[in-house]
Length: 305
Picture 1 (cartoon, rainbow, N blue to C red):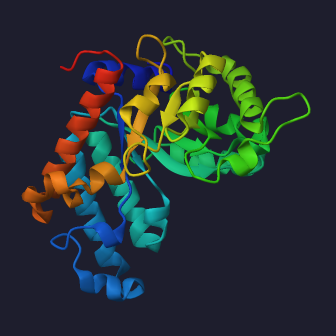
Picture 2: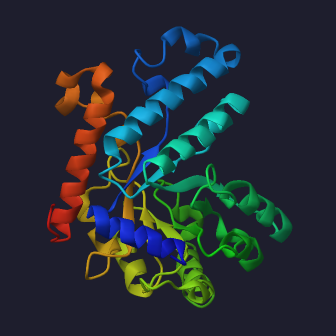
Picture 3: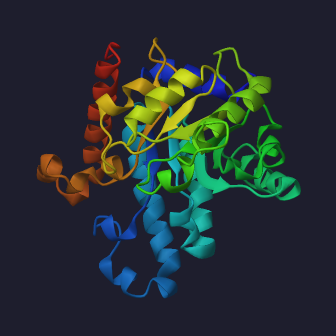
């Protein structure tokens, strides 16, 4: 298959699932049977042990949700904080997820001038066993900071557009001289640039990140963009719900995946799964993923199979 976006589209259809499971190992939220509390007392001296615990945690999560999601999204910051052992854990996590048939969207929000952007793309997207299938990027540098991530048609990039954080509007909502907001101008820019990378699905390898926490803006952006695929963060722990994300999809329930990280990773800490106990965190994660998948399919009037 030629384009990354078509691989993603096909896996979504195959699993009838529009969820993306973030792999964000907050060390202070991990169950004690996986990460002993004393390791956190001196994390600098215990990075190797912490990284081994994260890998085990991730592998069990992947086993639990592999049939429920087309794609997982490791957030690089949680691995980088553990230095070399953490980065080794990240690559091992990616390799394990690939063995389970999952696509990997690496959440690093990388970018720089053209030559450095190319180095980032080569670092994270080249190779078969440990390379990601797509990466999140910052589009602020313009096209010469984006195009290197699109050189390989089997790989994709998700550019920040309208993010889910509470202060997003401080810059993204600013009005330009032509009346558009900054995020509306970025949206037009991404669609035009991405038109060179359209797959058979009708969507581009240059996708966008649009948060669930701003459903009004999400609806407007989807109306503005017909060939840009969305990653929709903000579901669950950040406050977004199934009704909030509906407008991010096209009329056929296509064109987006919805991410949940803490809400699935640490579902065992929720009251509704408390009876499972910390030792069964993967079972709780599976139950949360099943619930999320069902809620999204229901709001999109799609069958649950």
